[in-house]
Image 1 (cartoon, helix red, strand yellow):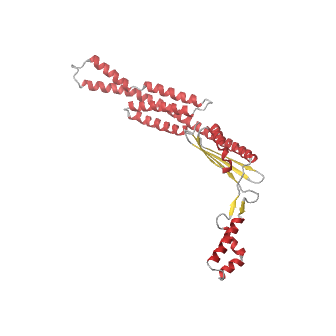
Image 2 (cartoon, helix red, strand yellow):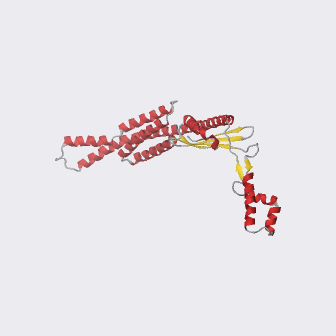
Image 3 (spheres, rainbow, N blue to C red):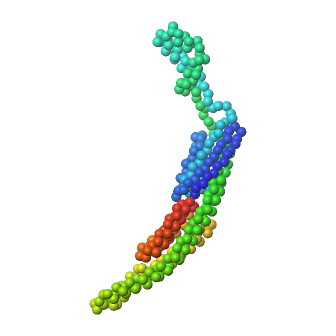
Length: 296
């Protein structure tokens, strides 16, 4: 679900740069950065993003470029005059009228203007007003940026599909590799038990009970059912990947079932070679689960 989309809108007096970024997330989490004059559009944008992108940590940024029109800042003349009069009054109150610095201050007014402009509220910014025609153009840019991001996701999705399919194929091969060890392991277990029985006096052994216990023990070691279920899960995973519907969560559930069967095989595997194969299967499955976070 990672992706990036960008669009530029060039208008008569200004231009806008629109960026949409997406990171992995199980849910939709949207962060919108834009001018406060269009804050009333935010709910609509969130609904649009939720509908088109559905999942992911989404960041939408709308940047306004430099305007070709005149500056939006103006001088607050009344405030500046008030500051000037207060300064003169302060000089009178402090009996500074005959000092050189005070007379210079009164006679050289242009030189003091920069100092007055630095005082609070001497310069004020005019309020921006929302422009519906401007917003319509911005909306087109947002749609273009989202479309660009969806293309990015599609390309990434094709790469993920190839990677996941290769790992599912690897799991199938490992499942086939484990079959010879599984069957030979049972035979080894039977032979080992027979050898140990030779060393034990069989006079006090209930043969019927012994056979029941032996069958129960061997059944607990048998992984045939797990092999069949795991193979079925792998085939179902491939089938689900080939469907046109959104199946990210479904694939996640199937991968959990695959993991359960692998863990059960591992718990029944006392053979070293089988354990090595199980470790490889777990490694491949973990990589598949990481990739599934990118799928809707």
